[in-house]
Image (tube, rainbow, N blue to C red; front, top):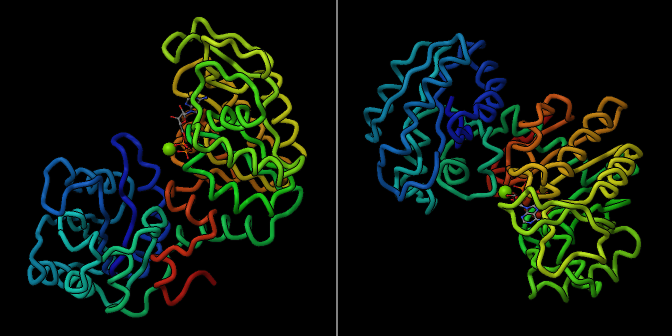
Length: 376
Ligand code: ADP
Ligand code: MG
């Protein structure tokens, strides 16, 4: 069984490895020979010790009771022999798929070779599904059936249901640094949501569109016109912060203080939503039946600019407890939730940063489109 997983994990964070365990365990418990493949980092189509999956194999071995082996071989005859020698119910992790130049080019020869490593293909790498690479897309042309793994299925179920048939009220919370990276998500979600709460530096571009002075806050001047247009079309559905936590600089947290949004000092910048806004966002979340969150409310890496992000995370955790469906997408938002220890209190924390964004934009993910079977 050839299984594409997303083990593109930062050191010390096993979230994505744990998230792949249900599929791996399901297969080995049924006696499958499980051949795992993943990319890690951005090696340039050649072996690079820095990006070897060998340490990942050790981390996986520590998380499962089933035998895990690793091979750095790039020779397909040797790899096929290794997969055939594998005992049923055991796991073989092969080396970083991006060590092959053909991976990112979706080379058909590589895809055909990869297909020799199993008798069917399981894609559980939601986080890589937005890329048409040999291990995510090309391989499906040569190995059938190609099916979704359990993590892939869960991701698509939560994100898909939120877009297609959300329990209402449906509230989206968007933040992060750049509006340019999120504009397609804003456009795609706007017709679907009952309210869209906007924080992060993104809010400042909207403030500028409203004619407000934003001091030294991060603004994308070339997006101000677009923000103005969005505000006109959204009516009262877009909800912007009414106060801001500002400071002299990101590295001067001791100068932080809250101001009304129309009183941002010219020599300071907004680094978080203000406390009044945090409370009103929390109230909006409390009244929702579906909450979808992407992008931190502020520079959450540096207290006290994490307060707004933490308020949103806690409000979502409480909403989950009251029966709402709460979904977190986006790498930094997920990291903020994990750091607050609230991951288990969300209905779903997506393991796909870029992939979840593209899915929310309404794009077809090539790694998903290529599968024969997705979900039950
Ligand atoms: P995600 O990974 O969850 O999609 P993004 O990558 O879009 O989120 O944005 C996260 C980054 O945005 C964080 O590094 C955070 O520090 C930054 N950020 C949020 N608010 C602000 C702000 N007001 N000014 C500067 N940076 C901000
Ligand atoms: Mg990010």
